[in-house]
Image (cartoon, rainbow, N blue to C red):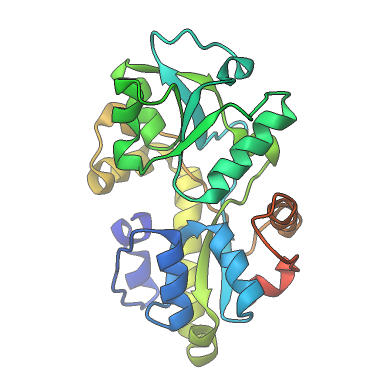
Length: 273
């Protein structure tokens, strides 16, 4: 959205056509098939798994930077909830993002903090239904991502129980990645380079122009100003600033919790113009 609003694609001489898909798995499948050339942001998990199954098809040109100072995820409860600590979650119902990864990472985090997860019910809920489930009492706590967290907190109906578990598990967490087709790079190296330059410009703008970025959020994401003013961005790195070591640590962690069957060397996945 930032690159579009600020005409960075036009400046680079790039014409784009956008396509919306419903999940990271669909995005990766479309990228591998060649139906799309670029994925602006996806969960890193299906991208890493795809590399273990059919290597060399995709390249990572940006990765998220989730830190304690930029908590993109949070555990939230209703404002009048009696829950006040992680230990209180034992025996409760926790709403989680769909897919096994979010639940397994959450289980690992709780176990690492001496919480018995054997009697916790993890319920996977699509984002559109998460807050209604929390407010109705169908779940006791929600592991929310932005902008769901900001919407809930600004409504006054919810409060944070715990800040980012992802940042605590791995500082500068690269859970989200931006991807480009390796075939597209081979066939259009200069066009690929210019397109990624536009995203690098957008990355710089987001980190340097916070107020202006939040105005773009209001226009494109269609949220209230109070939400846009408080939402925590999923900051994405420039293509030349990907932290390879932390990305490797993330891949190793996924292997350790059983989300990946094989270990991989992430350096082979990184975009090099």
